[in-house]
Image 1 (cartoon, rainbow, N blue to C red):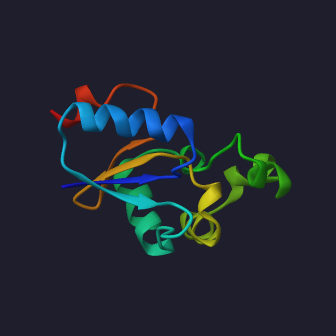
Image 2 (spheres, rainbow, N blue to C red):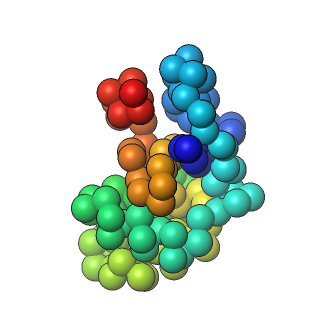
Image 3 (cartoon, rainbow, N blue to C red):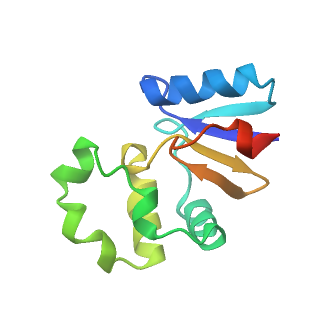
Length: 117
C-alpha cells in the first residue's frame, strides 16, 4: 500500500493524485500540513532513498526563502534537516510517494506509471 503525502491545495499534488487514481493504484492520502511526517520518518526516508538532503526541501516555497535555507541546507546533518522539515510540512518537497516506509519518489518529476506498476 502506498502513502501519498500531499498538500491538497497544490496543483502538482492534485495532478499526481489524479494519475494514481487513473492507474487504479491503492493509496492513502496524508495531508503534509496537518499530518506532517515525523523527524524519525524523514530520517529513515532520507537514509533509504540515497537522495541528497536538499531534494526533500521545497526549495521554491516561501518558508524556505523566509528562513534563508538556500545557503544552509548543504551544511545540515540528516537529523538537523529532518527536525527542521518535521517542524513545518510546507518545507517538505511534495508530493511524497512512500511504500513500505521507503520513498518511491520525492516531488512529481516523472509519471507514476513507471514506478507503481
